Amino acid sequence: MAKIIDGKKISSDIKDDVKEAVKALQEKGQTVTLAVVLVGDNPASKVYVRNKKTACEYTGIRSLSFELPEETTEEELLRLIDDLNKRADVDGILVQLPLPEQINEDKVIEAIAPDKDVDGFHPMNVGALSIGKKGFVPCTPAGIIQLLKRSGIDMDGKHAVVIGRSNIVGKPMALLLLRENATVTIAHSHTKDLPALCKTADILIVAIGRAKFVTAEYVKEGAAVIDVGMDRDENGKLCGDVDFDAVSEIAGAITPVPGGVGPMTIAMLMKNCLAAAVE
Ligand code: NAP
Image (tube, rainbow, N blue to C red; front, side, top):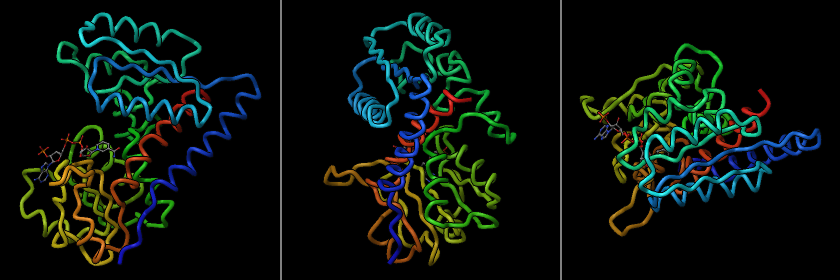
């Protein structure tokens, strides 16, 4: 039976470290501030924003909330971002995605000052990651590296397979694993014989978005399996991209859903906000 990687505990340790550092800054008269921008009424986005604000409260980070109506124009949103870029009392800016269809997401991401881009989505930060320079790293893959490190899973020289090549998870994940000296393969919907490829992985990261897609036949005995998926099963219950019950019989370590990768994303956002304030 695989060791369960406890994302709740690890994320809570990280948030406690951030809380302490935020308090130390506060004592020197510096407040860490995150501006959170939500456009429209997407129910999932509202939940994500609420969770981020709760984490800010816990860590002592001041959160400024900007909730704009669904019909907000691109120009209005860009004007707000410009204001926030200029404000000396704002360290980080987070625009919750997705945005309503009249707004071009790329334009908005590119409008955020790279040194306030705590999501790590700005092309400058993406470029910095790809050439190994300092910059903000997207929170979900950064959180996965922490899960692996803090669970004592060595990446150096290991074969890591990442299923999924999105800009927010798959691609930055592969680059971060490379930085840790893993030998990395990226798989996607055109990959041939995916189960056989995955079975060669010492570390298997699954970010597809299809409930219980990865079954036992994909997994090498003893491998570490990280499940990024946030899906619903046939009964509407939250589950991941990995068939947890079957795979946990074979894997050496595995993240559950919920309680694995999910809480790490917010903890790493808090860490990025702190970094935005001190660097
Ligand atoms: P995405 O943008 O939809 O990308 C999905 C990727 O999976 C694509 O690269 C796609 O390949 C690949 N894929 C789809 N079907 C496949 C198949 N049958 N075989 C192999 N590859 C396949 O999704 P995402 O934003 O990366 O998110 C992935 C999952 O992670 C979702 O469930 C999302 O909800 C979850 N997520 C969780 C967190 C968290 O904090 N826990 C954060 C972000 C995302 P192609 O490129 O060829 O189409």
